[in-house]
Each structure stands twice: as structure tokens, then as C-alpha cells.
Length: 87
Image (tube, rainbow, N blue to C red):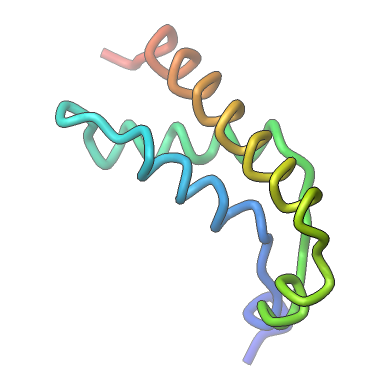
């Protein structure tokens, strides 16, 4: 097993949740993948090894703020990807 396989970025989960919450019928997998990449590039990394550690040590207000930042990043990424579509 690679060391990379032992860690995750908590924002990946939050961005995926924000994408799911804002999903539209016309969204394609390619479009949403681009949105996820752009959104994640606009957020800080928050790596963890065990998800239970993040949930246990993360204060409710901090988690709420991270969710809000993720949703804002996804909304901005949607606009960016739409404006820079490859035809």
C-alpha cells in the first residue's frame, strides 16, 4: 500500500456533498469532474488519516464554516467551468 492511499483530503467529501446538493439534470460527469477540480483548487487542503479523527476533533462551527466554503467554491467553480467550456 502506498502512503498516498493512507490519507485523504476532508474537503473532497465536502465538495462532493456540495456538488450533489447543487446538481442539475443537464450536468454531465465531465462537467462535474471539472467543477470538483476547480473547487478543490480554490480550497485549502485538510488531510486526515482516519475519518473518525476528523469528526471527533473538528468543532461544529469549524465544520459548518468548511461546508459553507465548499458550497461557495462549488458555486464559483460552476460559473468558471461554464464560462471556460471547451467546445
